Length: 411
Image 1: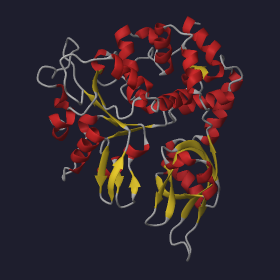
Image 2: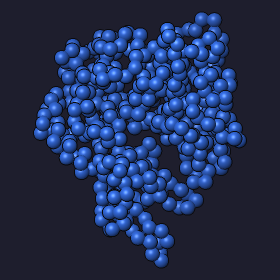
Image 3: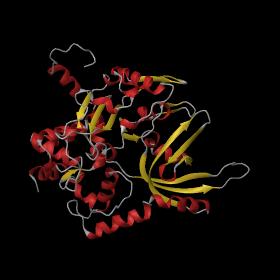
Image 4: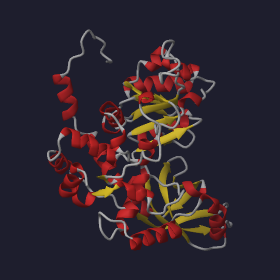
């Protein structure tokens, strides 16, 4: 064990896990984030430092029973149609439509956004109404009839994966047991990376990916070649982060006026646009205007929503090509040339807080995943979320840092 690992076990005890277990537990290609996988693993571990064959078999049994492959979607829908109850793990969420006077359950695995949950489930699990909640849901089907013109899927029971409460003061006290270098290596391992593969500067760049998760309205751009793991941290570390790629619309990002439901910006700590170089503009220009307004002031208006405030940071990840010296091809003429025209405007780019030079990070390889101890993913995500409300760090920076030759209020 490395020195920081032993310290982590001593001071953090059961909230750390060997990060290599995720790749040994037999999840296969199941599409569930790392923080959920680690919760499942820790639930069945006989010993927090050892993944035994017995534990592995229990995990495999859970996956087989509750984590279906996407190819089984129609089979499960047919089971519901045949009046069978089904249970499976998914990232369930609920949205409220006041105009229709109803609450709808979203079931991603079934591509179903108009299901229902009994009221008690929603009352007991309020996170369903914001960022959603991973858990095992028991579902049944009500066929259409005279009173019910369309068939309905209902959730009868819900077992959320339990998020441990983390005392921020306790976390700070534990931090004092580590040197700065040990803490950086521990953070890198907690993020799922093998700290031994990175230089000190590269480690700092990796840690910078966490800034939008701990700092409200921190807007970040990362440019890097394919295969450098730009989206990995955002997809696997926190339930408070939403990652989207391809087409994005004002309705999805900000406010759906037809449903009267808030968009991702209002429900998550960070919203990540992956492969931003492929984003297409809406012909009306509304998306561009909303982005500019929100990035500048942290609020926006759309349709019947006259003014909405939010604290989510916007992260844009884009692929770039490098020259033979491993420098960006467009470095001299403009790094943002990879962005679509509507995202290249200076008025838009100037509103971002920072540019992460992902081209300085190595490609992901078989040696990249962490093999050492780190904080369990769900715990780490909760800590990052809690740090957002602590203003002492911002006050410290404002008091102790001065930008030379810079009078720009935005900077």
